[in-house]
Amino acid sequence: MNTKVTDNAEIMRLFQQSGALYVDEMVVAHTTINDIDRYKVTEYLGKLKKTLEGVEEILDNQLYVNLNIVKNGQLTLGGLLFFSKNPQQYKPVFCIKAVSFFGNSIGGNDYRDSRDITGTVPELFKEGMSFFNSNLRHVQAGQNFNSTGILEISEVALEEILQNALVHRDYTKNAPIRLMIFDDRVEIVSPGCLPNSLTVESIKMGNAVVRNNLLISYCSKLMNYRGFGSGIIRAMNNHPNIELINDVEGEQFIVKIPRADPAT
Image (tube, rainbow, N blue to C red; front, side, top):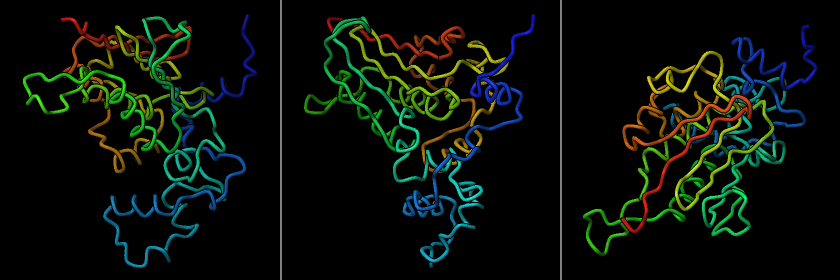
């Protein structure tokens, strides 16, 4: 017997998987051009190497339309997540929930640090990395005694995994990204399992499917985005014992990074 699909989010996911729909190109209800942070657009234009002479005069609705920030008078989801003053005003759960726990269980009541990180995608990335830097150990690793040391987990690996979570997550799922630090590991949990026919083994080989077309476009100019499909390879080259879990039943993608015993 065929199952009738009635959930709008599930319908969108089916279209997304078929390549007929990019969720980040859809408009966000009730938004207007007044929600746009003009400075962020100016910064983007600079990255595009456009002339900034008279830029304040040319920041009009047509330019926003040309940049895919605005469609039909409303912000696209990609435009909201990269260029708005306050993305969480309209999409409150598109944030990062970050917790550093005592012990190794998510069920523990005690934690060292807990943050709800908000802002645009570049701001989420910056503050997410700040959370890691504040809550992971720094080791000397042969450096000068007076130096701050290097992060116990490869910073390149953390950057690549966090950036992937922000840019490639499933935005049809109304859930935050979760960063969790335990005594023995770090977990980064991204809403949505791998799209289409992708598997953990295939992404380790650099295979990729575009889920968020606009986000990738903006990310390539405004973040340290090194190339579509290469992030996981780069992360694992810098930190080989990363575990990748495509949790289909839970509709999420989990990255586990073991921490070394501080006594060793």
